[in-house]
Length: 486
Image 1 (cartoon, rainbow, N blue to C red):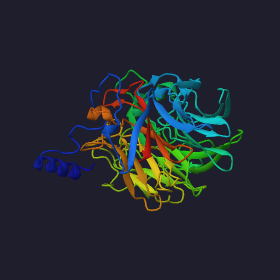
Image 2 (cartoon, one colour):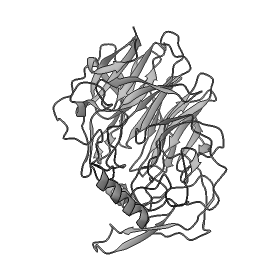
Image 3 (cartoon, rainbow, N blue to C red):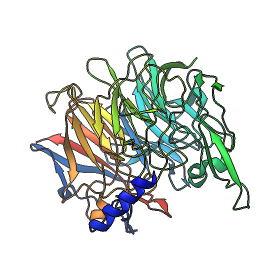
């Protein structure tokens, strides 16, 4: 921030009762959360007129996805991991008609982030924060076949999806290792940089760097005055130089990729995403993906960009790490993406690929869009429109918010980008049940229509506390909801 801008900011603060930069954050997880068992109450959730919501199963630990087997039974995946470094077993669980739960498979390569069912088998994305990402086929008896492994999934974001295309390929997303291209102290605080000190983002094609470097404290040494300088797409403590070329490779960071359902070579579909989480084919056969925008944290913080829904086109580049909201983040002082007390955002790529397309839809800053599905049935209505889960903000770790953001399910017209709340907790603001002290939604993370298309199931991850000092998940607080037309 320039001196003139800083003085102007202070003058403005003196003239009004409060300022965004100096008041405390008010995120959805920033509260002393209850530890008693969660008691879901559909009466605390407002749904679109003419629809009803009910809780059909409870006591899941960090559920992240749902699919349906050939008998129409719901099958839920539990992650086995929560931010805050809470590790447990990942599980694939079938919900029986009686309401009982049958564990089909479990594993340690956590977090498991999603599941699809195709021709008698389950396809699971293993996030692999310790051992690397994988796409795994699991039989209904629990037998496992690894289709692809060693995906670059050690960092902030993981291997996501998957979804099966009509071409018999498994499409999946691979999130970036870092927030905005540079490994920093924030990654050490998250825990993964201690496990993988050489991890960094991998471009999908060769890139030429501007030589922009970032100097921070060095958390690997006891000397508080020791510093490290790090460049883009390089390990922590490794500076870059102008004109340096970083080779591309597949698999890579921040991409949608695919692999045959029988296994084989990984192919690139599109790149330049930050955290492509939820993938789904629309009724017209076009592929869409949700993507989480940059955070205001780390060595290269980015302020005030949206979350996105993208139409995925073969071979396109979608802007990460130099574009946000479909446009290039400007170099000049006063850029809208420059944090109030941060440095101006400069480009990392000397020669960026062709400009990215515009998003199909924009979501609120830090709303954390995750799973999506499309209505295909007149029994439910809104045919051809997308339904999207908003996990909710992770403030203050991602930046300050003045009110909770997300924590609901939205309906999106993908042709116009217009969106509407479809399921949200009752109250004067959209906040999780734990903060509102009621029995409504906590953190919706996936949505999926049942095979008949008449019911929309919502996977609710459960309670997650996030503040400046603590990130803590609460086990056995996950819920499976069902929305039907009255």
